[in-house]
Length: 82
Image (tube, rainbow, N blue to C red; front, side, top):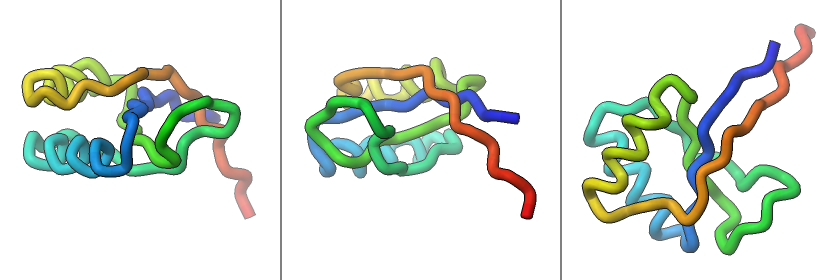
């Protein structure tokens, strides 16, 4: 089974790290991830959250003037059991 996530892209690594700090401070579960393959962006990392909290995460970022340059709906493939 795959997981649906909202992926926030930013123009710089500094912007990604700031977004992570803001989300952590707001208690929003998130993960700093490598930029998804096939996605053109200025920065090589991104912030991912579960789609269930995507809008809340975006609100936190916008309230703090840390709007992402793009938001993607992304489906991550499940890992095969070993």
